[in-house]
Amino acid sequence: MKPPLPPSDLGSLSSEGAKRVVVRYRDMTRVEPCPYGQACRIVTGGEGGVANVHVITVSQGGLHFHRQYDEVYYVLAGTGTMMIAGSEYPLRPGAVVVIPAGVPHELCAAATGPLEFVIFGTPPMAIDDPRARPERPERELSPDDT
Figure 1 (cartoon, rainbow, N blue to C red):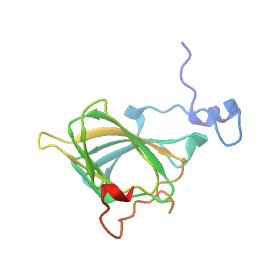
Figure 2: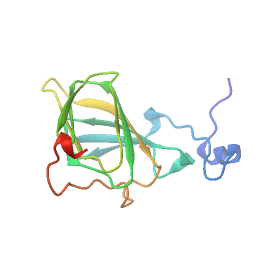
Figure 3: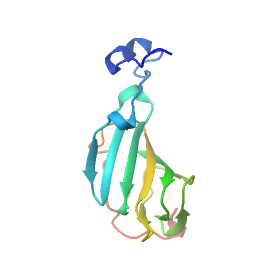
Figure 4: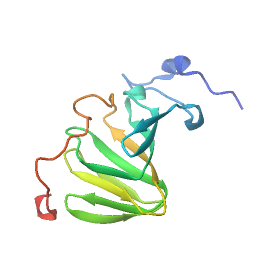
């Protein structure tokens, strides 16, 4: 098996516009503090042109939404709940949650320990881009608002 290509060599494999192959490894990615836990931003800032890929470990996440940034959560470990526009959904390993842009959501891990999950964010962009930056809703939404 060939060794992995360094990131600088992957651009030559591009087949379409800004989209390109990106190979990253979680164990080679810096872990950064984030509110309520830590984030490992394996593919971020629009690399590859397909999706941001972040592994997050947190005890909770405050109510927020993203204006123009869709998220797909895939739970790796832990249990808890996700509140989406006033409805509560249980989380456990293997759960997938699709959250379109503009939909308020928050999560809370069970008392037994943190939740660990992958977030696939699209379109790919810098996390501080205004379209992706988390914002607090002006008011609590009910399930009838969605």
